[in-house]
Image (cartoon, rainbow, N blue to C red; front, top):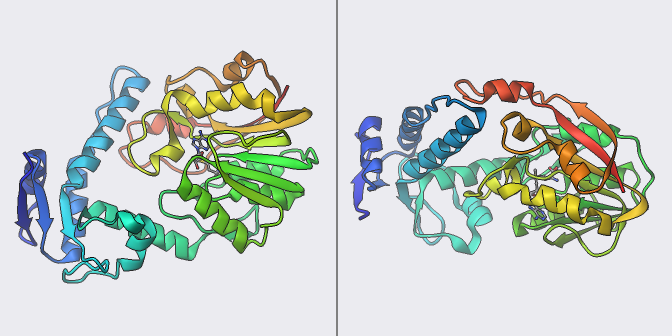
Length: 337
Ligand SMILES: C[S@@+](CC[C@H](N)C(=O)[O-])C[C@H]1O[C@@H](n2cnc3c(N)ncnc32)[C@H](O)[C@@H]1O
């Protein structure tokens, strides 16, 4: 059973981890900055992932450890007032960040990690991410995939341009690729996403970029109705269950979106049209699924070309998957019927 214990500045990380493992809620009453230090120290104690006999097993173990760590850290909770205030010493103003992230879903007691996530997201939303290929900033919202790694955008910016009248962007996120397609000359773009947060975010960005006349955003699972001459998709790149808001941009249970995209593509691509599937080979390297090339062939489609780029990001220290991430290649597959 869950019991609530009031805790404060004197609580040590080892004891906090022990209490969290006993399923206690640690209701924080101390200084906000000390709570951040406590969470960081707890995180260090909960981060070790032992390599297993296969990469796939190491990956599953890594995800299990990450989920368990998130659960244990979420036991450190704070009370939040109806007007979105934390009444703790040294607290920053969290009200706007919480309104943006949780809207009406704000609870009276919340994990501190969720509030920190909202604060981080608010910083991105205010500051924006400069996208070189676009020559503009994109403003990610809470829970929406942020284009902080830009190699995949460079692939889309440099692929031979097929002069499409109409383009689709499947799984648009912030709308960054839809904006790039419009910038490259597509006359009309329909951009869709299964997540309402992404739809709202893409709408916001398209409006800021003054591209509302060219780009239409829809809340949709996979394809909108009709056909396009260019269909672009950057699906979540790892098969796996979704347990947190941002997971849906990274993990695709049983590669459902990737397989669904390839299976349904013939119904939505014009005869002479071209699809651009952007996907990293990390899942293949980890032994989590068959190759993208094989999936394309199995769907009865042709590969016209494969443009590749190496991600520029570095693996985090202690990452048990570092060796696979270091070898990762992101491809833009040019696919035809
Ligand atoms: C890796 S993110 C890419 C976002 C954006 N296109 C970009 O390149 O920055 C994948 C996106 O696909 C969306 N998505 C996942 N499953 C989907 C589905 N079945 N139909 C439409 N969108 C989906 C996610 O919500 C997420 O926004």
